[in-house]
Image (cartoon, rainbow, N blue to C red; front, side):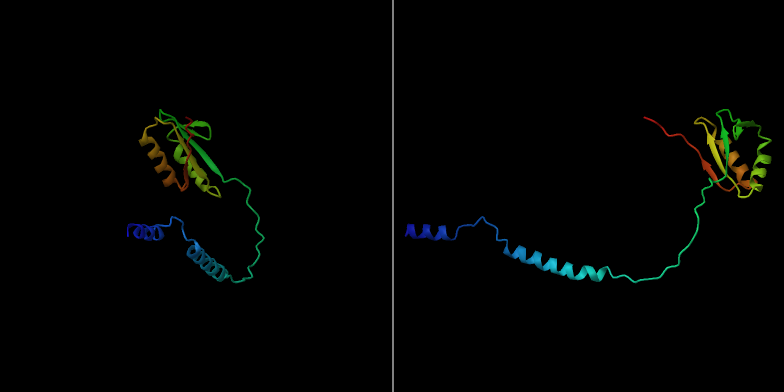
Length: 139
């Protein structure tokens, strides 16, 4: 009796091999589904669009350079100016066509109040575009 029980356990023992047939069947069905649906998803409509003959504008934008040093002195396009001259120069620049952009450079230890005053003067004088120029920090 003990021998018969041992033979029965050997026949029903765990089979470590994976049956891959159902897995392959599922993968083939998914492949067929993707083959059928991908062309339907990429449906496009042909449209006859107009052709434009525009030329690229190679002129750099007009800009005015204004620098502030740490003591609050102003430099307009690399020349020293006083605080009293600033509104007249801003008004002159705002009257140009196209209106130039103001590139504002300030040293790290420039008082924030001075930077805000210059920005307010530029805005009230008619210069609406203000760009801040910085230097990249190298490690």
